[in-house]
Image 1 (cartoon, one colour):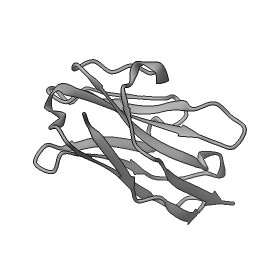
Image 2 (image 1 turned 180 degrees about the horizontal axis):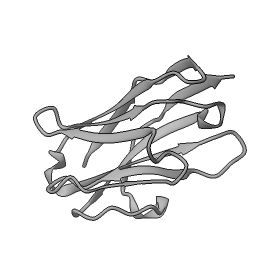
Image 3 (image 1 turned 180 degrees about the vertical axis):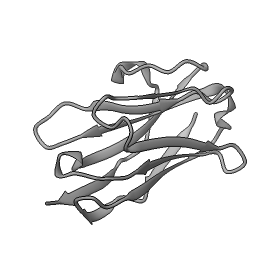
Image 4 (image 1 turned 60 degrees about the vertical axis):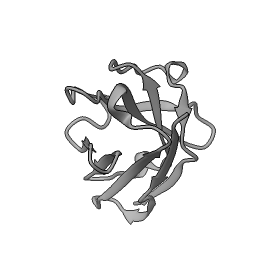
Length: 124
């Protein structure tokens, strides 16, 4: 079992930055891919970014490409999502998720473990 805990969400003005953290416990993430998803009120959960563990391959949704950066810290068993140039449309609850194996997917159903989410609110 892998337990995931997100942190770093908050309230920020448009153009600002936040860094989200996804700390894992229970097992090392060395054989898991980790993804970030978000869900705005009234909308479905959508893919944001993902990273494989062994080679650090990354993938981004078009809506965040060039603004968000995903990274991992093996020693801390943690994955980060650096979010820059935030816009009101980025407002959502952000979730991290993990799946066994070293391949990432954009489909919500592909992930086995989920954190509780952290709220990000961007004002205009």
